[in-house]
Image 1: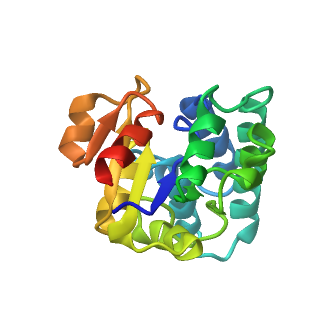
Image 2 (image 1 turned 45 degrees about the vertical axis):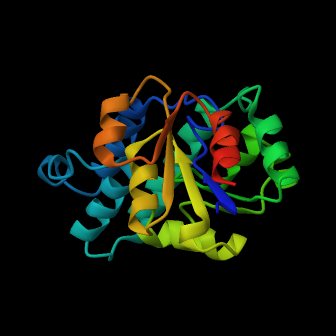
Image 3 (image 1 turned 30 degrees about the vertical axis):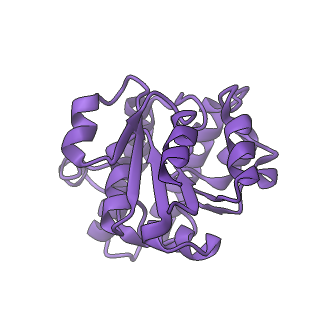
Length: 216
């Protein structure tokens, strides 16, 4: 039986507005002050957080200013992209219904906490735990991220459902042997989520309520 639901944030509970190519380009500008183009090119195909960590490894961890500057710039760009945003019109209603059902709710996100609070300032009224990129050494899809939010809401993996709009969210659930639900936002295809191994594929998070009704 599902006792806890863990949501991704951007694209799942709120519209995704980050221009990832733009953000990557700005972070690469920061990196060029510390390493050459060859080192940056070596990070092609990596997500932005992994790119930053990859450049830091090239520097041998001896230049802490790079990582600090890179994450400060990333936070600034994320906050700019989220100005004036709110969660989806149905988000609060869904989270309220989960709470009424006695479901433990958590958030796990690669986004900075300031961004989450800017978009969803009353989030504390609806969720029991928020685990951001600053709370774990290794972010999703690494299992550490999933394990930390499970620990905080007090739910075992077999009792949890991980929900998100990106394959990394589904992979996180798989990594800890939990169920997962993919939400279709248009940027990732149903076929991709099927290939990744999502337990459920939904149009949006409102479908979670039907999943729970069938689970009980």
